[in-house]
Image: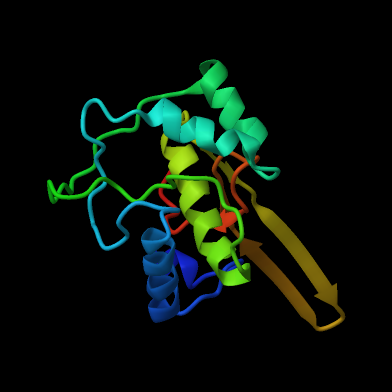
Length: 163
């Protein structure tokens, strides 16, 4: 979470993002943030947690689409400290300041994504040939942008070229 929040569009320092997450937890907006757990326990009412998000103007319609048949139970991750569930929103974001809203936004979008079908990766290849009298340049650039659920996420660079 801290690493992702340090990147655009959030650009929060690791200590700031953790301090803000801790405050959100203490006020009941999110689950316990100091966990590496990435596996929900059997019986967790994920549908209720999604329902809480349906009133949001940014992703409420998407949350509603999950409740109307788009829901996929999250995959089990490799970490479970048995004390805390994965970080997730617990109530709607009301009365948050700008930085609190940024951290909540990140957590809510990732929670909804984990309850969704797999995202897509789009690859584009740009080839350009430039020629001046004594100069010829051929350049190849292969950016691969991760398009995870476009209605939820911004474009992000994909770290691997193997796919």
